[in-house]
Length: 111
Length: 118
Image (tube, rainbow over all chains, first blue to last red; front, side, top):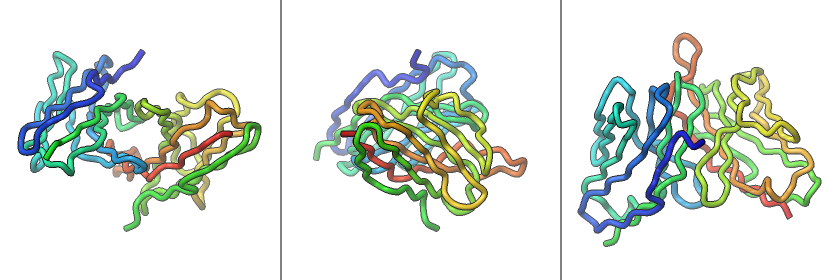
């Protein structure tokens, strides 16, 4: 039973446009959500996070939205840049324990 | 401040051999997590350790796998009698402690060790 799902394996966006990456979860106990970015042959790099007591967190070009009733979160990147091309992982945790990861979405930003 | 260090970056073993993967957390971090990533999949939690203690090993296979985080030195993930299905990227992450000793939510990852079993 996969508790964190990223249903789109890939996403292609034109440079300058908005990228929207989606993530769904099933465990209502999750209280913290994170997005990581990963380049080939490297470890995941923390991007942005949100606590379950909030519904939005913004950091520069990156905004994460949380809809608890729908058990859904999304990452918006505006404007998208070619350097944003990577695999993006959604993760969730309970009480600062282990993180449960989705399978990732490969974002390609075309110049 | 150096990031999370993992070595070796690449490890090749023949079936039946032992694999030892090392992880040095970021300076000041006392919580270590190990994850495994199989091809085309996300990261799967294996084990969570604090110094000298295993906090959560719910993701560890019951046999052949063990982990430790001694008082001094790096955390070690040990795989005995490796099989081809163990071929994967193994990532270590660390996090600092809050005032009460619990971990923060954000984990910082190392570059991973890519294990290939021939």
